Image 1 (cartoon, one colour):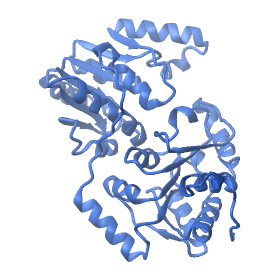
Image 2: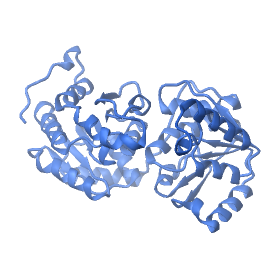
Image 3: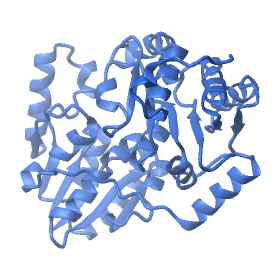
Image 4: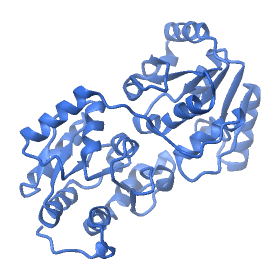
Length: 363
């Protein structure tokens, strides 16, 4: 069976969907798996053993007639039997149709987000979504799981695949491991005991930098642990990272810009990884790092760091809709206190039942 997975963008969402490719390889004998993704997100999939072929397209490819024709030729030459649309937006639906696969699987509610400008009533929206899916010959799967990873895996149920053990299978390259080893050595960080903080992301998902700095001071004084601060490419992310290091009282070190492979290698070696709801958090959870996710939006349960040992620290739930989520998101993240996060650190780092007790810390 030849299967195309479509999850175009967002690094975190692509990581959440990787177990789908692993499950196909595990449960569908002789399956050929390809994945369609855009630009930066496709780096997550490079060299993954469960993906036989990656198909990369630029952002906004669907606005270019040349790219549409090129993608159609490339996909049809691969002669897919099934396409799994894990995103359910206009561009992913379009790609599924271009693939020429006779069987198209998607989720109940596909294209409903884009249809909100036409219909605001929820019942009418669902009816419109079902009608669109029927016209486009999609088989729809209704999800019941409470995490996005498990929800993605439910798309395999029409193929007779029911996953009991989730795996991500993200590989580690030797050169990435060596580079992270050199970086930690040069920064004077003990490879056996350090924390990682990722303060970046969209502004409405970011926790205040001065609070991250307070947590770094706490980890340094209470746990004798240095904090490595990773930085994003956007100006405000870099400013936040520098502020954390400057206000950490010498307990934090700024990492250079890292590739996804290097970030993965850093996360694997950390004792705790602290971040908002961003790609780096979900990458860290996927490679087994002990994670603390700081999430304020209404779908925090869906997007908490995956894994039984990881911790979700919630703020006041914001809105799930774009129109209001950004302003409410900032307020929700500010509702998370330094003590909330320090307690979560203790739960991961202290092995005793008294781990919720707050040791004295020097701020």
